[in-house]
Length: 346
Image (cartoon, rainbow, N blue to C red):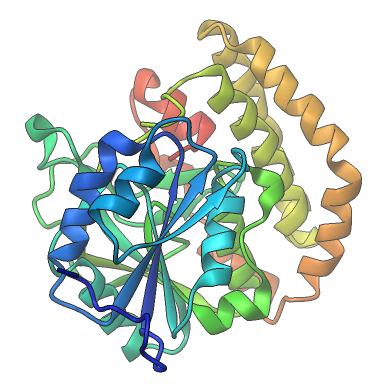
């Protein structure tokens, strides 16, 4: 019995496609898929994009959830590339991106659709993400993302006990691609995720491009999802430090208009100095230096992309600067700040 809407013989595409990138995530897929089967909003399909997994993710999905469309890639091409393959295979008005290590509440998708339907100026919608751990389920993982002038994404509300303090739809800089809904027409207009990021900050890069083009992102706290976080790559791993460092450089050089780049330069340089200091304390200096080396190697491509991206801009620089958050809004003890403040990873 198929529990989502089946579209095999339906000429009318579903309104939404939920794309789930996966790499060796068999242990997470059952609870994630079951929570999608429980959605009250029914007009959607699910696409699993498998990134060359070595476990039995594909066989499990095909056998146990035959309603899910599976795209199997021959090797791990990164989160951004897997998400893009799913977006390209999707149909309908909206595309959702969802991490495999999540469970969604029954109204998660319906609430995101409701808000985007009501506001054509919004290109994306961010869910309220809570911690998956049963002992910390009342704690927030994020209610949308902010960006500080130094080019560091911040998870809004991260670590706070959820007392409803972030309830109510509000504008945020961008959405964590671990649980977000995107307007398909804007994806076609400004481009998909930047695959050069591989993983980490590709969602902040897309959010910046959308803002340059004049679109907003709305946080929808009534769309609740529970998220493990760093289940695939491992929090604080050398891999995370390397990619986060490289991608922060590309994010800034690619997206900041020149007046904004000059104005924010002192904050950017100070932030990277803190990163170097923190990486020494965390014994992660080598991967951070590798990240800078990779950013340098990518520089010609980054500058070519910059020329393309800056042509998208339809808003004044002052509007972009106003959208950036103050760093003191995210001040935390140094232990928590090492990952969330300095690296800006999801």
